[in-house]
Image 1 (tube, rainbow, N blue to C red):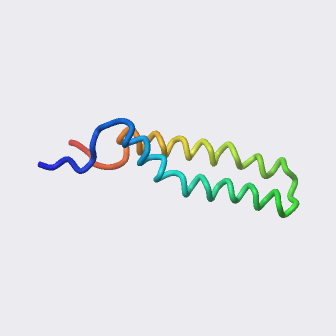
Image 2 (image 1 turned 90 degrees about the vertical axis):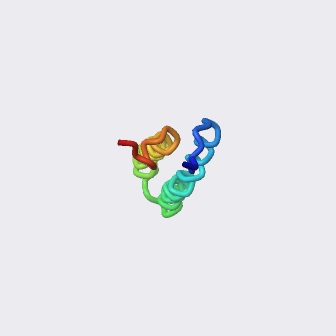
Amino acid sequence: MENRFPSSGSIDRKRAALAVLPFLALGLADVVLLLAWGIDPLWGFAILPPILFVSVLAWIAFSKGFVGEHRT
């Protein structure tokens, strides 16, 4: 059977980064938009750690194979 998902580490990390990058960009754009609106900078940076945390979790999930083909 053909392996659709190669197990080489660098390819998986690159694919994970490409999958997470749009969501990270949206989150950072949200922070910039809040700061541009003139809201207290503390509120803008209060949402930054959860955005980064979820992005890192998603990257780990995609790169390590938590998401994708489930072997039972």
